[in-house]
Length: 259
Image (cartoon, rainbow, N blue to C red; front, side, top):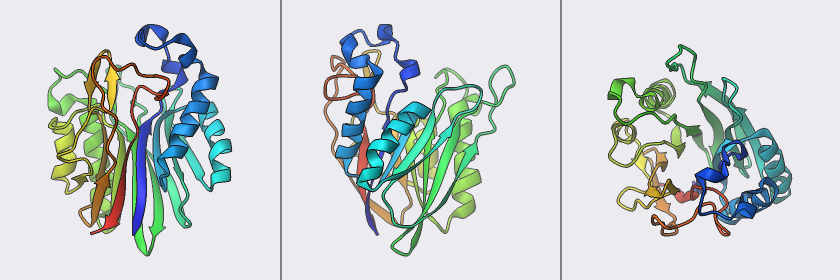
């Protein structure tokens, strides 16, 4: 097996509030122009599998129109509780074995199910059974006890209900974890036996509120080895979105080979 996989939070139009991006010119926040830039950015990744977060139905349809002529197929699963966005996976693999949306069972403070999910797509990758989980784990206050942190609850469920229950498959988990290297949530993936594609090479993946931080990850089974793609350098003054980056996140990517 030899393939390239990417993960990218594309920033939903519903969350495009100009006051949140004071260093970005207003014309760069226009949905139509940004959609074209996103298509170019995703195409330029030249990935066999692309995991996307914060994807709205209209964005998915536009990406589908642009990527299908390039050999890609896509699937979208929306969050619940009236959220406008979800996770999508586009791929140009010859053998896709199916997909499912796994909705997490954690609850909001008012008792409702959170509505966050992991979109799992199965592939035959050169005779190996590959399972790719695309997710956007929920942000929660950093002062919350670990056992009450919603992102941690979702990560634990993903690992226990999906990864550990099908340990014979090769796994890749990609997405926006809303946690940083060294946090308990991120350490949980390593404790479950998965490897961080960017281990020892972490760079900031977004610049929210003038604070560059690493919150996007690609984890994979130990039977695979990763060659991560180096990212652009971000600092507190880097505007995002920008003329070259249509989201407030950078895409991350790695070449995966059978170890």
